[in-house]
Image 1: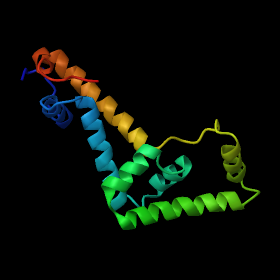
Image 2: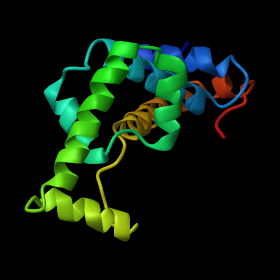
Image 3: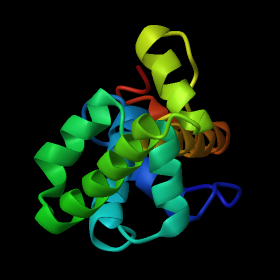
Image 4: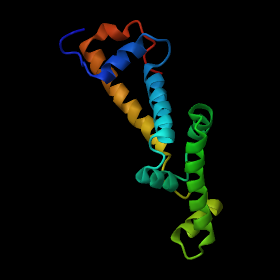
Length: 153
């Protein structure tokens, strides 16, 4: 390890991932999202800001909803999150005067209507950016590090 090489935890995670088969960036970002989903289910399930973000996104995208189902395994966390999402959706659909009711109606009738993105997708994108930046920094200071790895996809 050269003296100029990054020595933070992200750099060490990247070093370790480069020793494994497959794309280091994908492996690390997917692991980060999995950890985030578990943290949401057990530690952040009552975080008001996160719940607002989930409501605005209408829950998780299909990919992350499936990951939640197969990896999180928190019955209580799932019940709390999805009860909140269903109540918010029913309230929005039932209230004709609500601006969200017209939004829901436009979503159902117009698939091009924008809603905010999946919070787990945002976490995954941030993780990808963080790990790729660390990989580039490591590759600049230690070019031989990536020579024996599969690199990035």
